[in-house]
Image 1: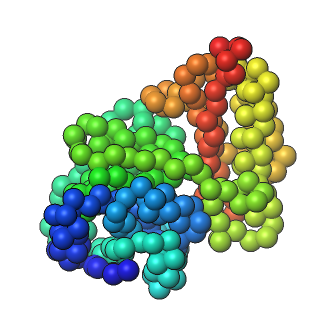
Image 2: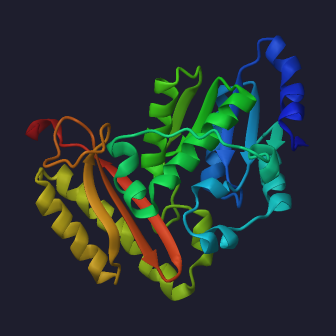
Length: 288
């Protein structure tokens, strides 16, 4: 594996493979790699000739300077893990390579997919930061495919809209959430939980799993599902920032679970750590 830090070196490293017709994959990360990130890379390795992983803590998508400062940065450990899953190129640019002096070009979407939930909680600048850096990374690497995790469901939907709206010739692949044995979604933030907080955090997936069980049993009413999921959260002393059932495509509130896929999403602050999770809900065919 080769590590590069400039766009020029990244493109030079890819030029030979690209001219030979090799397919290129991009796995964008902010580092502090865990098995969720590594699963993205494994999937990319299985489906492409060349795998690029970016490691860049994007300051533009953090609304809280303290959260940005606390985000773990472990490039040496990340590089070792990336080698183990077959990454060919590690792109680890400094901030000034991505946002040089005088930078003023921002990419911003509109509508419920960026204004609701994470957009409402973290401010309009959050998704502007995401869409800007993703546009830049796709332009830098020009990948055939880019891989994102389903845990960040709203982000994945925003990226798909971005690529479609701007006619970017990259396939966006969403990989299922990787979970700990007790169901907690893997996240770089999990390591910041103390033992008591970690025990409470399992309530996030417990609430989502209960909603899946209800839907599988035939319950379709959003209000009933949300009340029961909220009860499970309360049992674990979790007060959610949001707990919402939305249409998986539009991100508008869903009144029922029907033939169209719905997402149940939750965000909560546990101690000093903010966590998110989601599950997809679909009514069984017999009740659609």
